Amino acid sequence: MRITVVGDVLLDVDINGTATRLSPDAPVPVVDVANIRRRAGGAGLVATVLAHDGHDVALVTALSDDDGASHLMRALSGVLVLTGAPLASTPTKTRVRIGTHSMVRFDEGCAPAPVPSCTAQMLAAIASADAIVVADYGRGITANTDIRSAVADAARRVPVVWDPHPAGSAPVAGVAVVTPNLAEALASARAGGLESSCTGAEQAGRYLLKRWGSGAVLVTKGEEGALLLPAADAAQGIPAPRTNVSDPCGAGDRLAGSLAVHLGMGLDLDQAATKAVEDASAFLAAGGAASLAVVADAPAPDGTQELRPATEPRPATEASPENEPSPVVELKGLGLLDPGDLHPHGVHLAHAVRARGGTVVATGGCFDLLHAGHARTLAAARSMGDCLIVCLNSDESVSRLKGAHRPIVSVEDRAELLLALGSVDAVVVFGEDTPEACLSEIRPDIWVKGGDYTPEELPEARLVAGWGGRCVTVPFHPARSTSGLAAALAKVS
Image 1 (cartoon, rainbow, N blue to C red):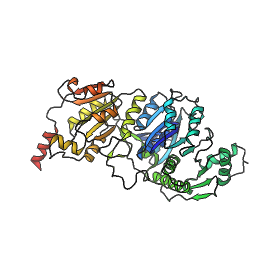
Image 2: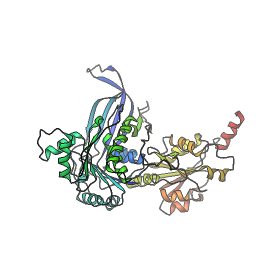
Image 3: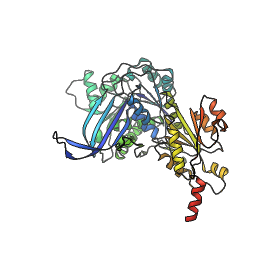
Image 4: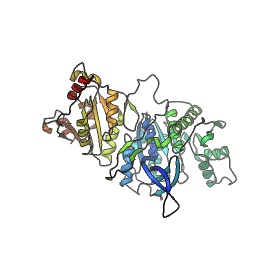
């Protein structure tokens, strides 16, 4: 499903550690940092969750050009990010956490920002979507008149779910559902003129339903579930499944994204709302927003840090019907792919990196028995740009190239091992004998291969040059090869 997320992005940072002593200069705990987790927040979290579910996601937003924005782009790998000119600095919210408890939070760059501009590509993404989520975090994207007009037009054709913010803009008329939490609903209703003594979700929701002109209002109430208020029917309470929650961050974003998906699949409003509440509960039970972070371990003595994806559960939704083939290959940070298919997220990763002026690097091969030579080649390739996409031969392709006794390792395991390397950002499996079709979709700026020949001798050289790319070779590492490793293993088997 093609889903466009419209809204403001934030950078959420968790500094996680332990505290076993007090500082000698003040009665405050000393935190020994174990890792730092960065993730896309706001509309970025909605987009990340939906991409993780396997949807084709475009994010219409405003993005700065500072260091925080570079962390956001890493966290948004696989999401097509469409943005106007850089504006204010990236809003960053940093929590210091000991175990599961937050000790303090620092907010930077969260002051009001000017209304951002938009591009034709941003408006086209809204017009072509099968469903739209508006995640308003009060940073101005929903105040852009062209974007508001495009969302209003789209609402006549496809479901639009609007997640509002007290500092944001009022939803455009005609959206399918608006999803304030109880505090937001009460604040918006009172700001609009409802008496300050109003404390009920139904009274506030009914008032907002009339004021906003939406098809329904879904007031979320945390562990109590939600209250659905359709324009033409009675209110319906939706209980939330009992869940052990250590961090409620991201529940509203998960709910809004799931609601748009289920409405886009044709479910009735009450069915879609019920499933969205269940999805939000399952999301929190699986770790919530923190499970989608990119992790930087605590700095080593030499000051270096290793970046890696956090463990990422895949929430169960109806986005992947049970009768579809079992997905087996993971695109780092984004869920699972079918072997043999060029998944659109691989293309979107390349587009997103190029959109911010980055360099896309790709390499390819069988990687049958991963060894140190491979690791060094991949690390060298990744150092040449801002992302590395590996084009991986399928099992059938390896057999045709290497013989019936190959591959030794299945494509599922080969892809998983590659993705475990910090140098690899995505893996795309292709079934042909050459990666040319795959390359034509990714269109890398640099194509890297190992060998002792010149770049001009590579069979892909002319193809890559066709879009202005170039080929680079890195030398093989002596005494490190798949054949040699297989022979050594045969001696001890």
